[in-house]
Length: 377
Image (cartoon, rainbow, N blue to C red; front, side):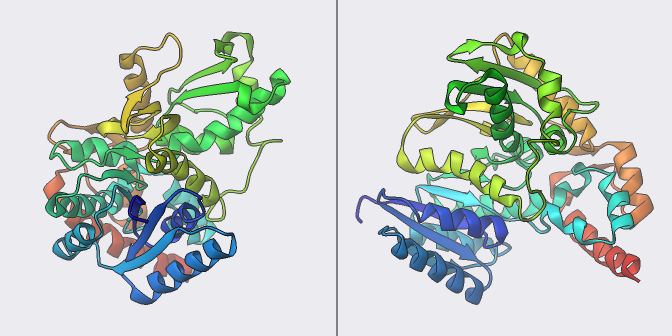
């Protein structure tokens, strides 16, 4: 196993464990390590994955380690000791699905604020993880699962952005591919989708079949030829929440895990690939991305310029509840979204410097916990 590629999964929550499990089921030489804050959790999860891998005839080396992401020095030690080629960050103070555990009427009111106001809950743990990455001296490629569309451009200001994100824009591409392939009477392997979309749009598409008030960019190719203009794209997308609807919520994270693996597997196998990913090289929003020799290059729909793609993602960012991410990393929140947070949780933040993010994350956590208790009565 001396030539085995080393992949560290940092974060032992639902998505971290799902991805870790799948990474171990591969014939190529690998050493995968699950790292989390609770020793019992990571031990049991690692052993389950190891036993399942053995049962299926694989020889992947599986290990685990313990750290709390808030302990930057200890996390850096863990990274340095393992010496990963790839780090998958699955760290967040509050996963996206947690608000869905509220009473239904309370959930709908909070849900209307969209995702942007919750940014500190994802930005802070990723920032701490990246501080540990820097301290460890590793040259590993860092892949992040926590709201890369906004976390990455904010952290770019201080040189702490992960290399690429996963999920979001990618989660809708298989559905669009399937709809287009069926419409064209061809195999999905013959169809290539190129989608430019922010988290706001990617969250809507499978649920509503459209991008709402935000922009999106979509190109569909058949046998390498652009056929977008030959299709009724609006009608195709409208079929996503109908005949092509899929399981969502926490069980639906299988889709997000698959999107993560679409990025991680080529990196682990050192092969080129075309994927969809948010936050590549600190970019705002989501893009089609070519992985070439371990580097990332935007691969836009035919005829679309980089400026047009950026404007599409800025549009989505606004409707997700973030008005602007400034060059110094300061985040300006959209007033209507924040008004909902103020009304429901008593939380109000017009703009946030990176130095204020940890305090804001703690405040949101406290106010949300109180809100959940209050609305549960």
